[in-house]
Length: 130
Image (cartoon, rainbow, N blue to C red; front, side, top):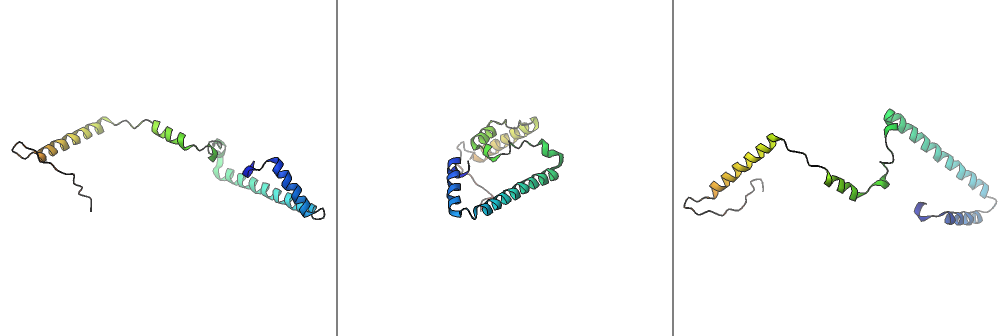
């Protein structure tokens, strides 16, 4: 049940409330509770009909059990995201990436060569950093 309340606990609360309220006021409180429950039921019916009206015919197509927040399992979501196939690169994109990599390698080798056969050691440089 809600908040760990069982039927036995609710009955005990009801008996204690009946004793505290007393037999004179109990019918009035019971009537007020029935009135409140009826208003809550009418509110929920109105909310459902309004959602159905605003969504139109798609309302019947929605799988409401799938949208239940109790079905949320972060481990399953991450597992499914990791198991999704990565997009397959196109031939043109692969050729462009290979040519860029080759050009960068050649430029890096030329910049590193001192001309006397020895190679200079360079540190990475980020032109966009401060």
